[in-house]
Length: 165
Image (cartoon, rainbow, N blue to C red; front, side):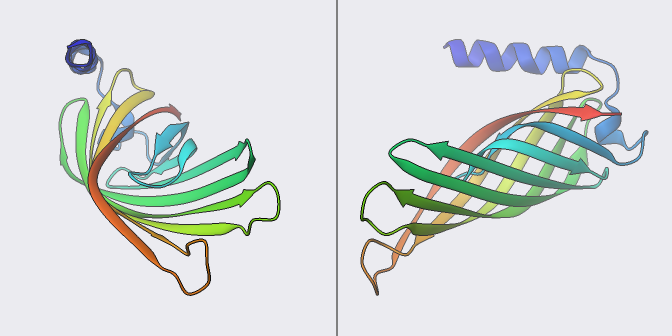
């Protein structure tokens, strides 16, 4: 129930704010920093280049606990509908996660592919919250040679980005 209340509050505050320059193209292209996650892949620091109709996201993650995990992802999103302080985009993403455990175990690299829809709401001219949902597929090289794993599910993620103007 708290999640619905929080989502309602975010949406209402986004509707009450001024026009969002990042989504209506009034200020040209803009660069944003924040936190985002792919559906099945990396989640962490995000660098977003917003060109108005097209948006490119880069995501970097690093975890050092019982080994080292490094993730890198990229997404491209095309805006298909714009509201006063929001937009709806469709796109896809590709990500990699390399896991190198402590000890003698071999490292593994997972490939993540997402097909997503994203709703983005602007709380102010510079701050956007987003949620992404869609279909994610993860391929991994397994623990032994000549093994291949495949899994897919409908999932969602969220993000927060500050745009510099």
